[in-house]
Length: 311
Image (cartoon, rainbow, N blue to C red; front, side, top):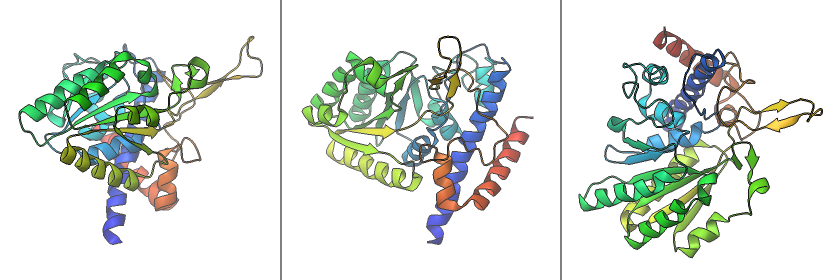
């Protein structure tokens, strides 16, 4: 039990650090400090930490425009990412990538695409390279629910399967594409049925329990490597930071789901960085697992660390 609690404390610190670091970025974004578009990922912290936990030195991570949580998880620092957003030469990629294409090859993040679905086909080539070179690593590729509508998604699964390549294809389903909900823009795509049509194993993750996510992803990664197979994983996430817009056309208010830019309702001083009081918020889940007092302590520690780092 002691080891489990130690692990949970360490993992919780990583999740909190990503949350609070994003809150700091958000505050700077509110004041207009950045010249580039940034897609924050409040609510995506648990899956980002879980993937970081299962990766070895030869694994390759292929990301989307909403990559901030993964870059923070893999790097463990904020300043190099902040400097990248400022387009400084001291940035993580020397100010050349900005936000939507930010990579970190030293930590396995070798490709990030701002083109919807583009990274799936790149992941096939990376998986093939790992196979040809007999590397121990695996390709882990991320996409959102909007990317299911792209031809590259279908074609890449076909190639993964036809070439018997191992890989984890992870869909972060927040049920929104920009300001449009799935039910408003297209028919329902049953990802489980779609995966089965290609004879690809499908697994669904939800609830934001980090220990459960790490355990399941570890098992799936081992299975993928052992059987030279692609596994499709759908992770249910809420991209937090929504607000209600009131204007002449919407006198009663209209729900605006967060997509990009500063999140106006999120306050960096909130302790312990909680946004929603339900399981859609990874911090709420940590409160249930660790208790509010312990989480407040960890939050204070991380805030002090980040304050020192960003002086």
